[in-house]
Length: 199
Length: 294
Image 1: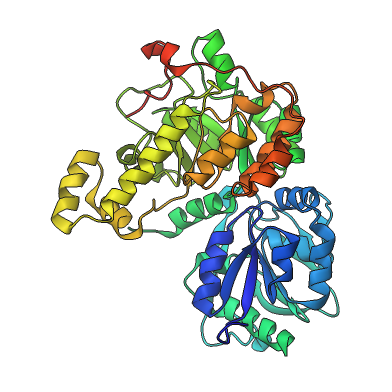
Image 2: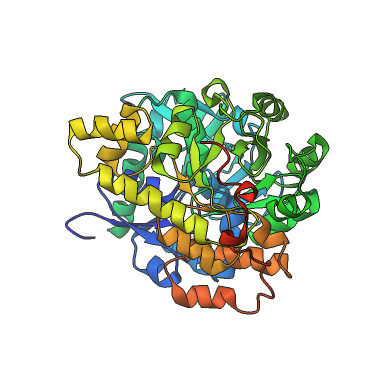
């Protein structure tokens, strides 16, 4: 914490980490890019951005960051969007791939189809979401679908019947990209988790 | 600048590719190797630029069968090239549902005056540029990602460096000009005033700015990223080298750790031979690919 601003890392191996940095700053955090285990050690929470989950997985292994990241998640909050949600899940399909398994959800990759099926939708937040004052604009880009939500996880918002914003304890995932909008509420929700965890 | 929903989605996918490497592939096996090495996307084409240069003839959109096999093989985005101005090749690629189209000077131009009106398409486009005016003209036509042209198939980074430096310098210059001076600059750049004003205010392009054309080593990738590129395209550099797998991995690492010489050194060990390079000055005017388009 610096001046009451939580220091939040953005995993900057590949993807839209720059957009997340800006979104975190708008929501009141002090964002830093994380590419090494030492940088990971210095932050109170972490965002795993959108991008290509296969690419991020390769780089996590090239740099021996996979286990440090899993250990980080056992103690501190992680927010995964799109590729980040895929990495946090404990079960990934289409095709099957390794993941951190920090959340009890099953995720199907590229589940809407190709880029031509990317879309912008309006979500009605669920009662429990703490985001109830207005719709959320959700940008889906070659997005995954959360096919299974385990008992410990809670659905905060859905689109077309599928969960798209889910929390489990200190962690949060979105299959869409709040960082590609001006609305800071989803990032603010994550910052609440970072602050709660620091207490 | 007017960003409708469709354009935001096009730019959105480009955002997802930042910090990544987009690799040229000519078949499904190469695409698999690229994905395994950590490519953020692959670019399907008939022949890599070095072979187009060597063999000559008309270079066209890749065969549909090959592109489809590549799409069925990898889970990362698949791009494909269409000839400059060939909006029907682009329509075919859109119908095939590729994720991005590169309206590319590497292929033989189909139209010597007009580029494709990319706003009419739902599929996003990337286009090459050598300077800011060219970049802004392509964006005005609907391109959602810009890359330097460099000199494809040369294995020589000098042109990509020239182009990224030129674009970055021209953007910096705009940021200190007054309103009436921007009107004059729009005329010089042959670009719409609205886009010139956007760049002057923000100091960057309104779409992601990547680099291509001559990247052959991890150090080349780091160099153009240090100069302002947000991701890199590697064409002949991987599959014309002696050990494509190792080189692809090394360039992926270099694109992430581009500011870290120690990591770059690590990535550059035991790489085998790079592709053979060409001196740009020894190429005849007609052999240059970067002068195609305007």
